Length: 214
Length: 214
Image (cartoon, rainbow over all chains, first blue to last red; front, side):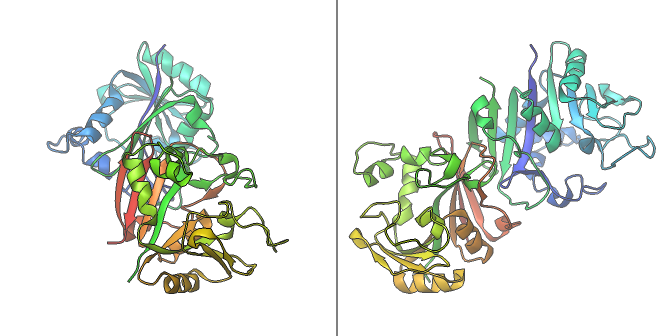
């Protein structure tokens, strides 16, 4: 059975995975890029930008597992864009430009479905109004034998964790106090009982925690 | 100038430093001993119990710095005991038996002062109704040239952090999700800007984070 995985999911010490006030210019709200500086410094991220350089240590090694063996992603609408409510038009095609880094079918959970959006490089966005279980059924069908990634944001990851649908959760604890935004851990009391957990701090100062279903 | 230090202060992934429902049998409420298993496994804790054995690795090395150079402690009333409101009597002398492990003056912040309590081994509890600044003034006077430890619980540590009175904060991130209780980080947005931060995960699975004023 294919696994359901979360990767590179950064949270602050106070558990916020995104700040307050998402907008076109601030995908993570007032958090700015503070949750992801460790990620931007990796060789993998540099390569995604068509650049050379970047660190090739443990942060990078962990980051680059995100796409291996993934056949589909499920994301929330707030990861796809800053709009809320009914779509005003269909011009918005995500934050990632014409060739998004997913290269698989991507199921965007939204109460406002719209036509599928085929991008360059193999990414197709499907907009569906579905429960986590039903979204996962569709994503698994699209992924074939490969794994399904839950791409975030926090409310989507939280919902899939609450429904016990996650097999592998990689969380990155960033030593900042955001104070406000959207929390990952709410409603997940006792989560640790379902997983084997491994932690390691890297020289960038973040702590990688990997929750694996035994 | 003597420094103001916090040591061995354990918090869950969701930022709770104590659970819900403190009682005589459950000093940390529903958290039980889950926030402190790493601590109970150390040689230092074993020795505090008059026992031999226990781990002598990094957890232990970090733990044993808690008392070095400390001349006084400030704690909240909830650390001293489970009672709330006016004291019904003065029979309660803390959780720690006749010879508490502090061996210094200890200032207990409470809205209900009572006579000072002299224990064996050099610990004297002083019950004062004071602001953080005034409590620190008294504790510094009692400590002479030595440092002052802020012993917790969470609301006391949070108040002293908010007032920017802490020079050294050692927090231990325990990979559990408590879900409820008292949070450490509330109201401390941007705390990281005031400190140099070092993190390390140890084989017990906890992550020690040390915040030091530059």
